[in-house]
Length: 348
Image 1 (cartoon, rainbow, N blue to C red):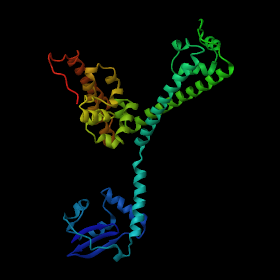
Image 2: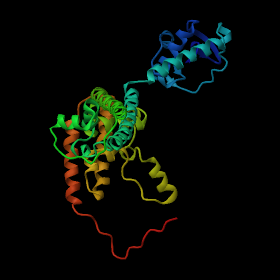
Image 3: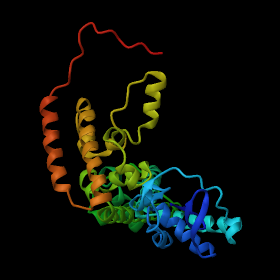
Image 4: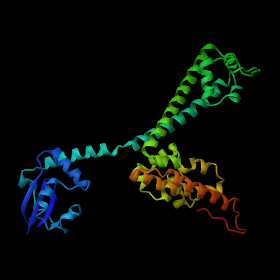
């Protein structure tokens, strides 16, 4: 007899007829639970009650109970057993909701945090430029003394040029113009907003670092927490990143450049998000491709360890990466020269 399972029960069939049946409860939630277990490759209790009499099965999941064969079970109809398509519809809706909930893991939240971090960095740059331009009318020399958050903090807390100079112990003649109290108050509002934005940026960065240490510690150790989170975000999830080859990881974030290469014959990209890695960013231009390839190879192993084994192999990978980078720097110590008389590539 052949053991087969439909959405409303498990059946033992022989010669196109049902010999035994173990029906599911007539409850959409219970049906959805069983459909989810089947999708995860689990064996149901109803199937276990019939397995001892089976010689063949219709599902690879049940291969322990008999030989798998192709079987047309369309003659087993739900209405013959008191089930309706409305039950199936409600069960699939419940199953879809549960699937959506399970699909939102900590790596998805990390992706949103990185997007928020990038937005704040972009906003900080705009506000900082506006503050320097505006306050520079009153005290342009301060830009030489302070930068970044310190600049915004000094303007927000002290305001006028004499007060800022007194707080910093500065003595200089400024070429800036005087400023009205109403104008200065508006500048201080802008600087206070920028100061709060810097604070939010620091908190988000600490959150990304702590969550990456929990979700993907090996990736965090190799790529850094922020770059690692960007890679996970670009891939879609940690699971998708772990399934990618190292060549794909190397070019994550450089998709547009790759399409330009394929369509218009432009130079192929050597790195995408990995350009933000310190080893790539600080390397000479002719070494960056090889170093990015080495980092991507180690991230490939790190992602799989973080997803499947959860073993800490960061020290091993870091040691291998340092050794490989040292070899690249030795092999490509000087910029390669183009062969004399080599024809230039024609643009299409």
